[in-house]
Amino acid sequence: MYNVVNLKNLGVGDYIFKIKNLNKTINITIHKGQFWENGSFILKRNCLFENTLGSKLIKISNVHIEENKAGTSDVKIMLQDFNADTRVHAIACQFLNKCDESLVIFIRFL
Image (cartoon, rainbow, N blue to C red; front, side, top):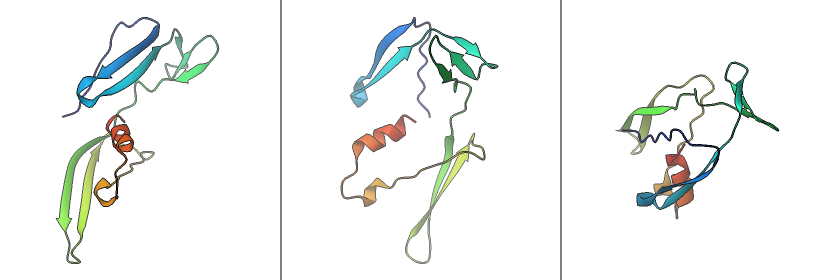
């Protein structure tokens, strides 16, 4: 259902990950560092990164479209793995004159 790619044992450096069927390229940078503050951060020589590896990804478990009496539709989206701080943005491209494909690609990789 969800596409997950695990890249293991990459050394420090810059890498290019290409997804041929989508004609997309993702740049990956591997830094040398150490975990800090119970693993919440990665401490490098000159900077500090927040470690979000343990964060769960929000999942859409079900989508239900229901016609109402006014001739319009109500859309209900059921979610999994969310909390009180979760924000969801829904975009209906079919109602736009020209859908911005870069926005759709961005949503797919979130």
